[in-house]
Amino acid sequence: MSYGKNAKKLAKFVPLTGLAQAALMDARVVEAGKSKIAPVLKQRTLKTLTRAVGVGLHSGQRVEITLRPAQPDTGIVFRRVDLPEPVDIPVSTLAVTDTRMASTISSGNAKVHTVEHLMSACAGLGVDNLYVDITAEEVPILDGSASSFVFLLQSAGIVFQEAPRRFIRLLKPVEVRQGQGDTEKWARLEPYHGYRLSFEIDFSHPAVDSTGQRVLFDMSVDSYSKDIARARTFGFTKDVEMMRANGLALGGGLDNAIVMDDYKVLNAGGLRYDDEFVKHKILDAMGDLYLVGKPLLASYSAFRSGHALNNLLLRELLNHPDAWDVVTFDDEKKAPKGFAQMAHAW
Ligand SMILES: [Zn+2]
Image (cartoon, helix red, strand yellow):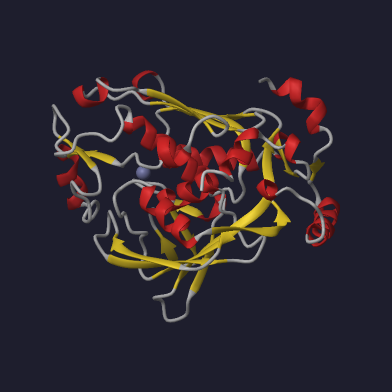
């Protein structure tokens, strides 16, 4: 479906740019308590808290996370509870301070590494508001995918809140590009009435060549929990030695990553999906993009992108205020289809 066909319908949505409109929005949020906003268009948080213990992929450090409910419009806030004074790190595009190997967010000297898989699960399940108490500086890798986080969030239960979800809606395409020829990579966001991601990788490795190099995921027709969340992170044995020498991948192994030598996958159980590699890139991109702080109404496409380029894309978006606005929906029929289906995913 083209954006143009929806232009008429979209005109009735509530555009929210500028302070005056933000003030109007606050009035709407208060009203929402009594209004008949369809549940699929309301913000969501957890019903109760839940905990997990694991190790950081890169640090190898033991870490405990506690996921807790948060008030409407809190967003997702990581809290370093191991520091002498707890430090809150709300997710945002500009809070991303390091994108080597993983996405790191910071506030002052306090950091949290490898936030992307947990953020991806929140994006996939539509969790808007959440506190993540964490006892070290890296999110546990668990099984290397987002499925453990999906399980945690679903076990705690997801509840609707009396405030409308606010979406960042693309109005114009935004793109970032780097390199040329063999090193070319790019990522793009375009207007789309829903949320769709298309990713292409270009790895010359027998285990990767034999599987898909490109995947398209659309919230309106595909299931995040089934189709994307189980895809694990991956690495090559030849890189592991170099990474460990640099203090990385210290917690990595066959139980939390797909590991390949020059010829094949070394994990005894093989792959979870034929195209698990590129699906993990979609999983990562969903987590990286959700660091913008709100769900996107957009079509994302990327070639060889990664954490760094995904964050650059968000910065490019924020640098072009004419390329997006913030909208809410008070009529389920006008909401993007995929977001309505998410309500039934759990
Ligand atoms: Zn990843």
